[in-house]
Image (tube, rainbow over all chains, first blue to last red; front, top):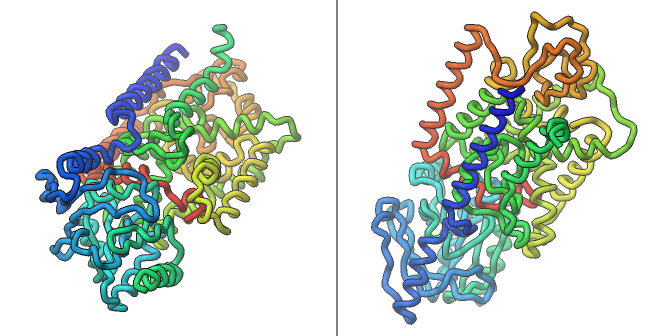
Length: 217
Length: 319
């Protein structure tokens, strides 16, 4: 029994150390993953309160994500708030700059391949893209999956609407959310509608279409 | 005091594990989940990672999430972790390191008539293998939903669904038929556990089913000294689980049989094994380590973390 107790003590000691180490390594900050981007955003807002240039994180260039034009402090967003600016690299090799869509309605979605409800509503974005609505920009931002996974997903599903990489969560840091799918309808740079979670593609298509039509009026 | 600790040592270990898994006290106060890197690690026991206090991932939830996207990336890291934990501890995890096991044991203390173990209850233990195959593997792979978390897991409803929908107003509009179903599943599970010792663990838990495969070879656990054993079956008669012999697939290695053995033939600790078992153990260990290394190189740790730092609406029954 003494041998057993020693082993139990070792197992517990190890798990305690591991938990304490990993927990404290994160600075005991629940939003630590957003820390870098948050600092960037705060730096940007301090140095240029009117309009800032792109903040490019060199280490992220290969990853294909650039944090850009941040002039809004990071916070939980609500309807009526200004939509934070960013630049994202898309699967097709082009870039999406939020600042270039000030006069458009933007449908911004955050998703991942492992998220059932996210994948379930993706056909809704394809239907909206196929509708060819003028002055509507659609962007689906993948949450922290690697480039290869996103490329394989897009190829496999045959999506033609804009999909962005966000391997390190830099874009998501500007749009903090507890869960995905998370979708925002943005008009003239202001958040008009926020959707948390999703039903099936047909229902979501109708929801988004109605919100977009309301914004277009 | 020493006697008290000796008698309740397992309970203390269970309690410490539950606290370790859920030490984000701030999360319980704010209704926000932990978003640190520690969520890239899988806990040994069943503990929903959408629980506001959870600082570590649920291995069953991580496995299902990984299987949902397995056509894009094979879940080396999660499989390797499960293999390693099973190989070292087997169902010792169920007995000592599972917070939901502790909850079930406390529920069973409510004074009511109790369901005795029988051939019928032994038969019911096979349900968990069916749930493992259908809900934890096939539905995630072929339908793209974490089947067990979404439709059955009472831990997700208890630890995440109910507290978070109470604390976060924006989640309440998402409540629908699925949430009602999950609450009903929780009520059924609680009722089973009040009347049957560790009812969920015995009949329904796919994680217990996974760990049961490692029982014959696990490094640590209960074992019988055959040279001392007089085959009186006192251990089997006094065990509350549906065991046919000590350390079979249903044994959670709680060690309670030790005190009932008249010849002191049962002990708990590092097992003595023959050459054949040592060989199997070494091969499985190598396989587990290779899977973990390949998985980490393949960003498996990052993938588990990136899933667990977000609320799983499906696990909570509101997706």
